[in-house]
Length: 351
Image 1 (cartoon, one colour):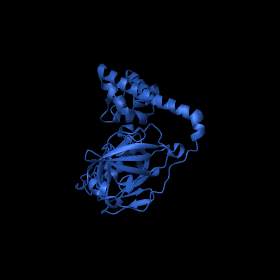
Image 2 (image 1 turned 135 degrees about the horizontal axis):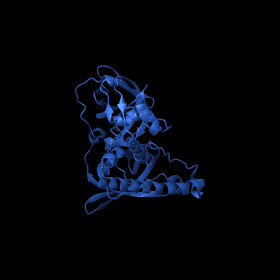
Image 3 (image 1 turned 90 degrees about the vertical axis):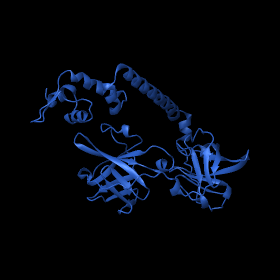
């Protein structure tokens, strides 16, 4: 049957069937090379139903592709992994339900966000300058310091990523909360240790701090630029006509595999608002209210946006879904550059 007939039989639009073909999920049994007509058979209706059932169960398209080609053992492993993930989600939902409908919600619905003044006068403490490693995880901040689990105290209180300091104080700005956190020092067996009384999200309500312990690794006078992760941005220009033009932000993703054109985007305001690609390798970007322009700041080559101002090469790809094209670009924030974390992603559509 032709794609139009198959569309009616399975209840999916033609554009979605074409997208499934592009994603190697459900391809026609035959495509006429002269007319371009796509033909399906009735047995593929069952495959189509399985795809829709897996989507309804929470599988991503990438996971579904694996399920369709896996052997029984691998398929069972994928099901078990999804069950475990869903079980964790259910636990979080149950905890959230208790908060939303219980006394906790009534007490915290107007919870204050911690906003302390971190623009405090700088007082030097030469003893703490250098690199420090976390000696134990904390409940509220298991990733303090990122995957590298380390903090730097830079000379003259220079700030990097979320952190700065003055004598006796660790200054934190995570984008939502700002806090001034007391620290104390202690020598043990010839090594210097620091204990930070960290003010967590609950601090405005509870008044309690979380104890974080660090050990000094070295006393090197680093700069924020020296400790940042740097990509190779010295790439030759290769043209890519498909990317030329203006793209506006559509979605923010923690993982590339979370992209699903079938799912509606979130309604939150996005920080990376737009990017324009010009012929010859020039490009401009808008972050919040700031515009980045000029070849001394950033350029592009096929497959990459080269951000010279922070030495990051952000890979991009163009994905077509139905009648729409999406531009997916790596977002290498401070978490990536200083925390050793994986890159996030922004999704754009043509503006």
